[in-house]
Length: 212
Image (spheres, rainbow, N blue to C red):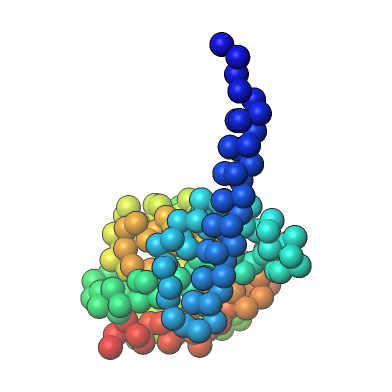
């Protein structure tokens, strides 16, 4: 039996075109929701952008659009969809901070489960966040990597969380954590692997929202 390569080729091209159109539509809907704070077809947008994450970023670059818009859409849509549940959760609440926020002279000890144990020395913003967390009933974890999140979830069993990271890492992490609890993601103001900066006011505001 002869394989109809010509037909298969046409089908493949048609599917590729449909995928590109779907990704483009998801980006447009996501960008509209992101800019107007009005969510449109969130399930479709999240499905398409998570499934075709790499191609979506490629399309953005081809049209000279910063590809981080894909991560921003994913994070902001998740935030909007889970905000009400996050605010209503009254059980254990945690904040995950990346270790890159630490001051270069940080002397905090790294616990094998809880990560770096902040001494609130005042050299970086982590101490300020910890003080606010004490006020609003949150526990702060300064983690060296994503593997610590799984250990903390298993040991401490939080019921909601705030995650702080750069957009690419945040969009990936928030997808996994959202399966277990309501989460709110906040992007770093200045990313990188060293001397980063967090939006402290936004983190504290999220804590306040959960206590309303």
